[in-house]
Image 1 (spheres, one colour):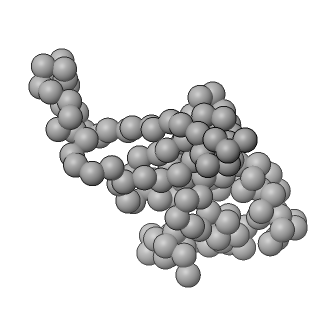
Image 2 (cartoon, rainbow, N blue to C red):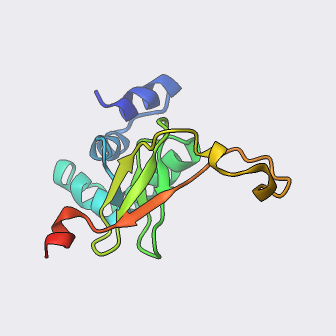
Length: 138
């Protein structure tokens, strides 16, 4: 069973066939699908699943904090099931591929007190950009 399915079961979230399929599609280490990609993959497993059900399920999972919405460069939102593990993103500037990365050190410590302007900083989001191997070879 996937990590996401285990967390949802632990919450007592009612796992209908449709919700289960969406959670199964999102299973993986570097999964960052758009809603349409989730729907296409879910429809392969459960042909009768509707686009509206996928969108509603993704919205519920985001509200629960079980997945994250990831937006990069005005592209379609992507959904990241790795919401419970601290990580940053590496994004291909050409094709939009997203990979989870784990930088070393304390990213909060990199922001000096005088640059915080009195903010109580609680979180850091860093996006690294470059070309993936496929795009850099082209």
